[in-house]
Length: 583
Image 1: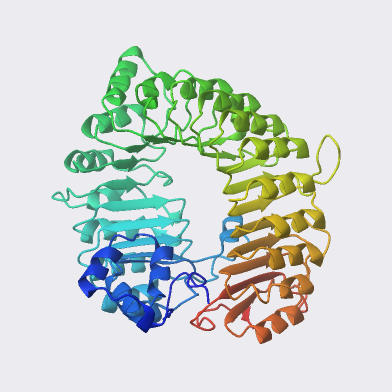
Image 2: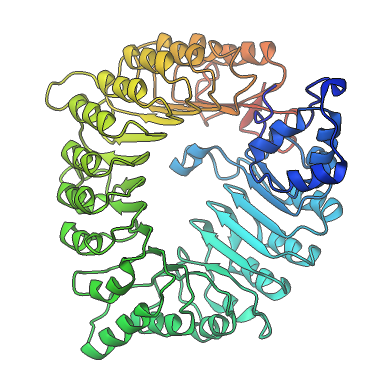
């Protein structure tokens, strides 16, 4: 079994101990302490029994990429000295409202076990988990040394839970709350931090919607001299932002508040001066409501920026060019498609070091806005180091993507999202097969691929034949027949996760992955042609898989409209709601 198949290693005694060079245990402990990669540590644990035991006792961090792939009891028995846990819950397609809210992924059962096994837990990072206020209070009261909480795309809690964290976590260094389904009851929660708390290094509440107590925030920032990341929400105005910058010139990352106010010369000079003293700032984000008139205040820090996140700022090409012309060190850039092709031309002209670009849609249903093939080509010509792209657009051509592949052959992540389902090459009216064929043929390091547009089975044949390092594949509204998925499942030996929606793939496609599912992390299929009989056959053939069907109210009982398949060592989950059928 692939040690990464479930996200953690639970067993393994690889080589013959008699043939393994013996090292003193203390030497192994010190050596393993230098290995930070979970993947590398998993591999180390498979060498022999001695290494297995030293690794399990010395590991301090564990990542569980699917909270149902293993139980908390198995994790704590395997790794008794963990200080930091990363835990992920719902499938990624829950971000597109394809998974019901009460599907599961409750963090509380994990906390119950951790309270006994890991009372020394210091750090918890949650993604797509269900988190209640009671769970946050439990966390705050049961782990005396707790220091860092990060929640991304979680749901179920309110600012009352944040009050508990602020009140009881006396040594808190990080509170990162990003894109959660939170019941925002107001900003008083910031007042609950003790007056003697000075340890905070990371504070992010950028996506909360209500006003916060600025007096409490100002006081907190003023006494936390090690604060290096501060991301405030849209309710913080420019005057308040200036005051915070004066108190925290040591910041490395900043998420601004709103720019929606008229600037007078005095406030411009004051804010620009405050930014000029932030010499360590390398990441800048938010820019809500910014216009060309506001941008000069951030010019003093642009020269040092390596990451610029404008995914909340609907700025145009002129504004973008003004910033990029002063940001020659950018490695990562996130924008919305209001920048247009002209803005992307500026990216190609000013960002020679760029490695990652994400272009999000401001409105996926407005075909008058957005970026096109020419913008993508312009970026590829000027950014030869580009290896990660997420690109939402209304139209594309095969020729453009072929050119992009030639200009940037080192792509590891290529995520092209043509928002009109089954959209062909808009110039030739041909399928987009050759576009993705060029990507997988040329970009041999490709690990993640998202395909879209009009695609036939030929595109999937290319993927199966050439994408030998592919780990994650996302497909929507594509393919001709089961053969397409069969090409992929039989041809891509390193696949870990496959996500498919609205494709003509049925039972034969589902069952074509029998030999692959042993080493894969998960498979999601929704609105395809899969039946309950096909799912039952898969479950019979692969007893160590959880095959879950999410039933739609009033749907055809013979069909499996939403199927989630994942590798597990914990067996069927015990908290499945009535609409989830485990086969």
